Image (cartoon, rainbow, N blue to C red):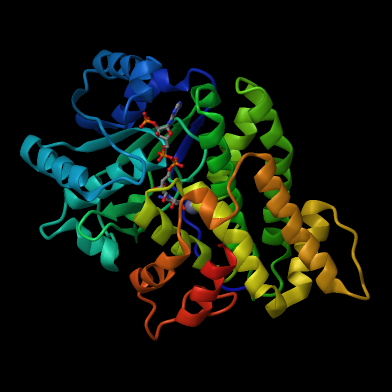
Length: 388
Ligand code: NZQ
Ligand code: ZN
């Protein structure tokens, strides 16, 4: 196991009706003037936004609204938010929505305390300070409610890039599983795929002696595999939604990634797909993860065989462990199909002739991508081809 620091300062406020406490939580962190950030329409339609505003008013918290965050959130709205924060003396960001709203709020929070262009953070500069961000999560997926990162589509070039820094970790995140009852089956499945991907990016590692985090990863994946069909069959199954919601958070606040090298090549390849085609992140991952696995499996057949046996219950073929390893990848693909995810380029609307553009946008140049296997540009091209 490698040395590590683990910092997850977020208060997770979990359960039914907890969004009604939001004003008290903002008070606790000293917020006096809030930018209330939300998405297209879901938070308005469900009445959630009215409940949030009532709690802010009850606690004498002033607020300015900025709605309209699109999935794959754009830099344009971030600039607008930063401008409002600076002009109005905003001291707290409240994100009400899914990963896109939270990521947009994080970008605004960092940009509001920065004199330069906020894009610098999305081109490699670490975020060292940001206004405090609180979240009310409405979609279990990206894990941004507990993560130190934010992903924004920079409109000039439509490149999707991420920023990171502990200052981006929310001070609190309110998780009421009931708020996810209205999420469509497709978005629910995209979220499930994303959280599984967050675990798998950590699971496939070269670090040895990480039994605790291995078992945590396997446990989270097994729980997701069991709960996923339940939420799809019965969208208002509270316990199933609750389990999926908590899985999404712990899949990405790094509790199961500590002390081990992590990969993240598949996320990088997917971000190019959602940048170019504006597809849902989870759907892009469903296409890219099995392709990446098929390509890198020979690097450590036994780790893939372990994944097959412990996560999918496959039987170990000791004579030919590569058969077991392949079975695990097949089982993952079958599962993704069963929850309604695409697993090939065409189903996503992506085109083979765009592969050179995807590879170029990723700009690996002489740099490699990922760590389980350090992928060159040529490797990345071949993995995209496997996904066609
Ligand atoms: O805009 P509204 O009307 O709210 O609709 C949203 C949106 O259309 C809808 N939705 C959200 N909550 C709902 C709901 N519909 C009905 N009922 C509800 N309760 O769902 C749609 C998708 O929302 P979005 O926020 O885009 O989805 P998700 O949470 O999957 O976030 C995806 C974004 O997160 C990034 C992705 O790249 C993508 O841009 N990621 C962020 C990470 C992070 N910051 O740590 C890590 C991830 O790997 C990921 O890259
Ligand atoms: Zn993700």
